[in-house]
Length: 386
Ligand SMILES: O=C(O)C(=O)C[C@]1(C(=O)O)C=C[C@@H](O)C=C1
Image 1 (tube, rainbow, N blue to C red):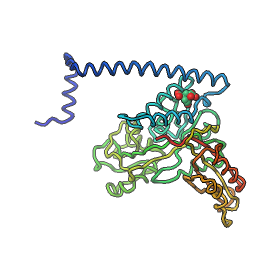
Image 2 (image 1 turned 180 degrees about the horizontal axis):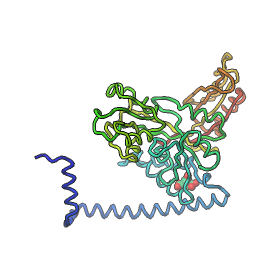
Image 3 (image 1 turned 180 degrees about the vertical axis):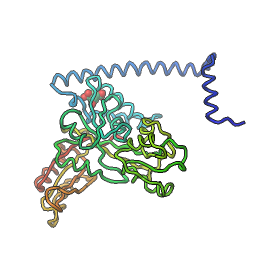
């Protein structure tokens, strides 16, 4: 008779409790493990040696009177990660190498004092995943119920930095985040790109038992085609976060959720169908917000908030973009939003390649400033490293 996997695991656990003499490893395996032990020892010693140097850097920063948030140097971290990618010849993938080095820096920085990072919660959201991807696990992550509260907590100094979603490659801009910059003095200190994998999850086993599906409106939109094809008649309920959707899927009979892997773990749900997002490279970009501008890392981006005054006059946008073109500046994104001052009056959010304090961008910005009625550098920050 064929054994089910359930039966197999039960049998396995029985065996595990019975006393067993361990099978001796082959001489070849033992010798490989000895070498791994030796390498681990050296890695361990080097990690602590590195941590001691990072401590020294921290002490010198403290000597200059800097506070916790000032100990964090995104430009230096970006350089460390780019160096790691450059010298990596495998077999570990760049993504894994970057992840490991981020965690090392996160742990080294936390010796001084862990950073407090505010994000759009609750636990289990993609924003939390973005926090951990960028800052590593040695931070204190503070989940907050709204994007506006993330801005407020950073501005008040209760959090060192905040992480907010800004755009998704399938669904476009998160206007609420963009609009927050109209009245906020906060700066953009970094960007994070997170590959978004949306899973259909719940307590039920197959699609037949699903009566309704909850998710954040952005996630429902990212899976629209899949839902139209596979569950066309099932009610779709937009909720405040994917984590809230997962909580409902845990607590309500017949409710399934669309959310990320972290939510499935936090709310103890089974993945019914993995990766149901409509586009294969579905990615969300997040911004790191803080209270000050940082130095150049060598590969930077700058976000500007500008207006030409009378947006409807001939050539208004051309006057703003002319200085960028004339100085060979690459523009990666432009977004217009209502100025909220007069009707049909707009401001532009423009992303360009380069650091605001380095030529040729500094030259272009001086010209742009002269041509605009509103001009703010929202931040110059290292371009996302993977
Ligand atoms: O180089 C520094 O300024 C450090 O504090 C060291 C270090 C690191 O571990 O490499 C730690 C934290 C900073 O964000 C950047 C780098």
